[in-house]
Length: 188
Image 1 (cartoon, rainbow, N blue to C red):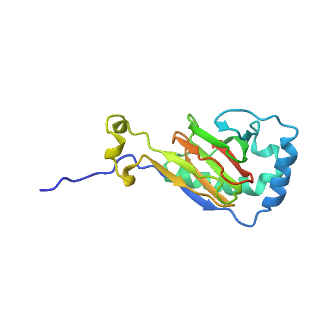
Image 2 (cartoon, rainbow, N blue to C red; image 1 turned 120 degrees about the horizontal axis):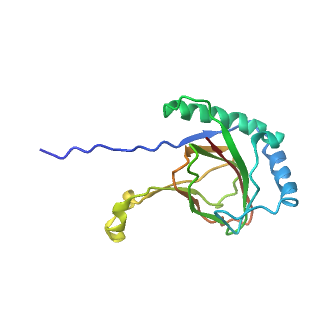
């Protein structure tokens, strides 16, 4: 008799493509705001991250926020959360050459979202990390590639990802000579 396996604690990451949006105007708007916002240092390495803001603070992003709010409603239904998603904070990430983001999470929020406005070729990927205690006791050369504790997504312009806020993630370095730009946000 063979062993039966049961997959536990499945993690859902929603992926959407937001189309028919004027990304060029949004990108121009962001570059103008970089001049007046010193930004913050949180998980960004060499990159610029804006101060946090509310969705209603920047009308130009409204088409994206409308789509994202619908994504959040779908995730709340999928997870059986019986309340209306409440957007909390938003921020812009601009990662130039060699910029990245160290591993982090957004707990105690419910869900986090990232929408990619500008994605040059070779500008990096988001890597979702599996927190697997077993890896601390197994030597890495004994683990096959399929069992590595991460999942990488290489976005394109318009890619929107929504995921549980406690899911650890990082962003690999931008190897292009142009900026990668995204908007991130959290939902309660």
